Length: 401
Image (tube, rainbow, N blue to C red; front, top):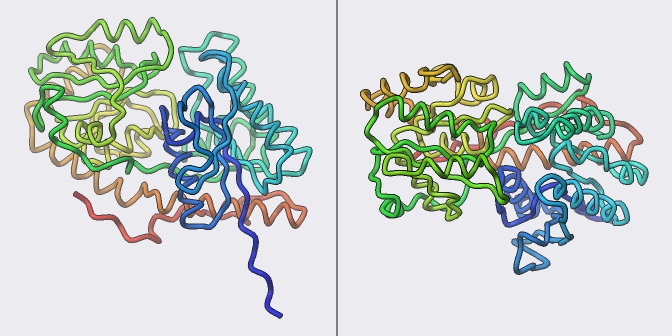
């Protein structure tokens, strides 16, 4: 008699707003990962969603089951409250593995551990360095890193620098799996008309309006540079923010603060056709918006932090926060279209070869199976048994536009 076919893994994903993606890079990861695990790896995946972000709440979206729970608490507590409810709910369901994004949720995984359910936690970046948090909140996020390193069966990091950080700070091993910048629909160049710009004749910022993303600094340096091409500033936050209001007040004919652009074809057109993309995110690790700019061939000018050097490479024009440095870079680039074009081509080729959703999803599937097999054998996962599952070289490179 033939052996029965193996049962598909039942996986829960907890910690973000839900699917389809509504706001953050984590949301995009959750959407791409969940749908890919169902479509390509035959897994049974449930994503916990926050009811406030979804007017219609289908029980299944692109093969992924959705479970909706409330998320009270405002910007400071919404994530923690919703994740806590979801983790308790998951503890009483028959999951083979639970994937938790954001180490701020790490202190609440103990019910799952008590039930013997393998828990994987995504470390995100250095949340305790975010300037939007007060001193108590920063202390909590730093403490939650340590708890997550202890409480999780395993960790996943989105950059090598974060992998090294968790090893140094907490003696915790992790698996490196990044993101891809291939998000949404192909660019719709006609969408540029609504912003009053033409290809190659504007600079671009895309960021949540939060202090650690340095949009205010970029605007000041842009104005000091004296370049004539306008600066398009894309982004918002889903709560009242003095910082966001201050950025919005910069809107004039040269600096155009357009708010959030949620139509992917329009946003991808802005990436694809900008003279350069200015990226001020200084709280690691890998920023999906930077990978998206690279994917569409934008010449990238990132702030000089280790995470961006890791992802873009050594030849990009990195800016420091000292007054006048970014202004000088912008002035030089504005006068050198050949260099801008070369930077864009290099970024796109690197992104297509290195940051791929097919490789990301396959790596997570491999990691999930390793973790479940280790739990079945009564063992904890280790670096030797898991290896290096992220292998973009195993996939044929996509066609570079």
